[in-house]
Image 1 (cartoon, rainbow, N blue to C red):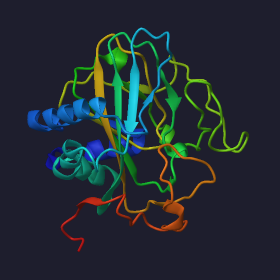
Image 2: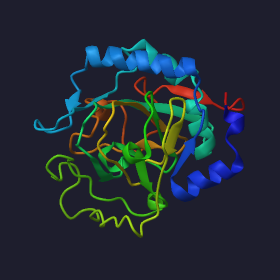
Image 3: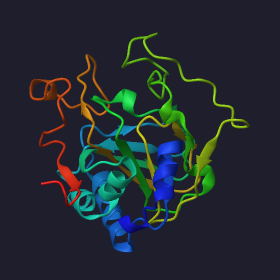
Length: 269
């Protein structure tokens, strides 16, 4: 699969901050993730949250950091081409798992995912970051992830809670606010996806998604490349890594059992 990651796709990723990789995963790999998702839904972790309002006709459920207890997730992360694709796109020689993220919008979910960058919610600094988002159900264009092309090259923007717009991470005024995204003029990209397709995007690329008329089960994996280091925060990050600040100093590479190396070039020993 990694041989299909062309120079033009790498250039697109670095220019736009998001690309679609068609047929990234085999039918068996998609089924492996689908089985893991159903296990996860039947047995959520304490980090699982319902991210839609009570009056929503559907239900938006999220869960985080389950790879070490759901074997299907770990197999996918370690054995699929996902990490190798992230390495090719970021130009990294070694790729670490940061965390996994389950996102399920049941049929009829109205709750949108608002425009945001991911990295300001996290406890990492660095430019060689990559997230993979893959559906195990067909996703039409109007329910897929959308991206503002090139936004990863701009500033960090204020992270806010999705439901009530609160600044629970960086203090008010410390980062630029999210600008108005004009759908008529903004360089928005997005793709209808079939199982096996995936999008890969930089952790600073602005992205959003609408609700979903049909069931939309998606699995995301966040990968860290060569230049990413620990950036402890004074607040609870999303997801949190309690106690990590006592084990990994600020500015240190993410060399910790929570973040295993899942791919490296043959030249790295």
